[in-house]
Image (cartoon, rainbow, N blue to C red):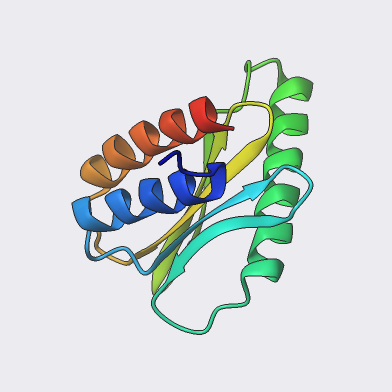
Length: 123
C-alpha cells in the first residue's frame, strides 16, 4: 500500500522524535503557512506555529538575499527556556523544531538537517 505524502511526512517527524526524545515539538508546514504534519507534547496551535514558521523563513530568506549570504538553510529563535529551530525544506516547505534549553545542539542539528532533506524529497 502506498502512503500519502502527509503520512510519509508524519512518519518522518516520528523518526525525528524517536532520534531525539527531548524535542518538545516539531512540525512541517508549507511556505504559505499551512500545517502539514506535527508532533507537539502539548496543545500547541499548529496553525499559528505554521504561519509564524513560514513568515520567519521568508524573513530569513530576505535577510540572506539582502546581505548576500546565499540561500537560507536554517535559523533559530532562542528564549530562556528553549529554542525554536527553523529549517528550509526545499522550495515548498519549512521544518520547525522546538528544543528545551540545554539540548545537545550538535545532535539536534544533525538529525533535523537529515529530516529537512527527507521532507524536501517528499514535498
